[in-house]
Length: 452
Image 1 (cartoon, rainbow, N blue to C red):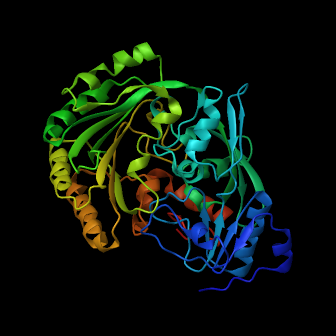
Image 2 (image 1 turned 30 degrees about the vertical axis):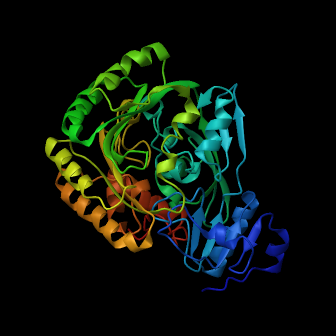
């Protein structure tokens, strides 16, 4: 393992903690959400403020060591950690300030969506962000930010007003439409390629109570369900965001079901009318749709993605959700070796699809369906079987897939698909990488290589 020398002056001035492998707290600090990832950094710099982050970036650059940046640590590829290098850990930076008068929220990069949503909900406000509440705001936002409010309010990046960024050379800058607009464009979808974001300023919206939840059906009804789902999603109100899933029943029985997950962020009377077809189709085996505070909808899937479970995912957008694609999905789901694995289809429509594909680095703005193929298990001895199932299922579905992928769902073995994540924006991102990080200091990510 690389021994990272820390100058005495940094040790004396650092506000947070500098943890080497022998330090108390190192083992917990080095771990990320995906238990399949097991790396041991040479040093973990647990930062308390922007000065700590700047000093850590300078330490890594001047020492010539590999740098990783950890926010919430949820990314399935495990790119928040490094084998032998320097992990810049932002988890201690958890400040949130809500201004209800301007409907602006400033949050530090260690904040999770659970913490963000609770703070904003005090004032009846919300911002699009995630579907698992333990996800960190930083990584999710920098990659795009799918969430329950995206039909009405767009993705997380579409609600970003500004960000404070520590660049590779140690400078601290503000990125916004008014200041450093090129950097602001790049970080809205370009991931951690351009610097370390030390605070985010978001727009928030008047969302307090929503109508949402899950309607479940037997797997045998999957064909009829997806016929319904295609029709239902053809003319959705912006206030409705809906996902579909081939998943296992949450009671631990292992029963395979098809589920419709919905969130309506508008008037509750109108919501009852708009979601009536969902509740009447079938009828469902289980109807858990009802009024709830907005933060609650973001916790409903938490139990299905526990910290430490082993995860291997693949993802892509469908060209169309055809009958043949559905049959292939169902056949593969029948053969999954784990009761924790599944397939989630995220529907894009409304505001998220009205934004020009080149307006931000995130390019996937057309209405349609995104598949997250989520392999998940607990026993390391079952890793080979589960990884094989994900890969074989994805290969079987490839004929129905577009050459597009959501960067936040890419695995650590899919660097060749980075261009697919950025499409028409890739060359501009390469040029900006050359400007902001020509030596590729920030390369532990879905990397945009400055050499092109």
